[in-house]
Image 1 (cartoon, rainbow, N blue to C red):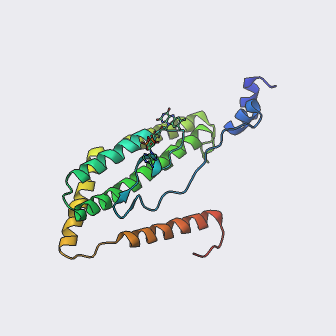
Image 2 (cartoon, rainbow, N blue to C red):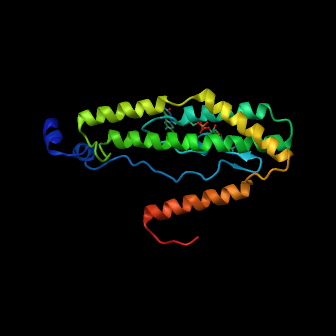
Image 3 (cartoon, protein in one colour):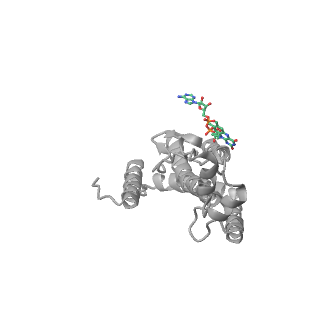
Length: 195
Ligand SMILES: Cc1cc2nc3c(=O)[nH]c(=O)nc-3n(C[C@H](O)[C@H](O)[C@H](O)COP(=O)(O)OP(=O)(O)OC[C@H]3O[C@@H](n4cnc5c(N)ncnc54)[C@H](O)[C@@H]3O)c2cc1C
């Protein structure tokens, strides 16, 4: 076995360094595509059931707390079935992009930790800069504004429905979501698969 220093000198990625010690027994992270919707009718998903988080960032519980906070705020002001539908619509509209961004962001931390980000690698100076930027991006989130946005969407949805304004139905939203997801997967795999 080579001494630790030799691994760092000879290996050009963390994967190689870790493989040297573990004999290629690396821990796999299983990833699934983001959900195209968190709601269906009057049913909503939240927490781990709705969004995947990697082990690198450990943000499963915090995202669940944010979900519960937004859902609780919205449902508290719902007094009819139509209000509940509007609440869930607002919940899905704000929480899905936010939690899926956090999921992607956590994944980036994993790539950074393992030296797998292109143009950063295991260069200490570049890693420091990238991680500080990563931290800054994480902390830029304004939870109060997020909550206000959800409430605004719910109120607007109730108003639009009462005046007969056309809003995107859940079925249309799901269809568009699945279409987008399918296209992204197809692009990633490079396969020509038809819907
Ligand atoms: C081994 C392990 C270690 C972890 N370590 C950490 C860590 O160190 N730090 C960290 O931040 N995160 C950690 N996590 C992640 C963290 O536990 C989750 O992100 C968090 O628990 C998600 O909360 P949740 O409320 O979304 O889901 P859960 O905590 O899974 O809660 C879901 C609840 O729903 C219940 N349930 C399921 N189906 C039904 C049903 N049909 N009817 C009624 N109830 C049902 C379940 O019994 C459960 O109580 C770890 C996870 C695991 C598995």
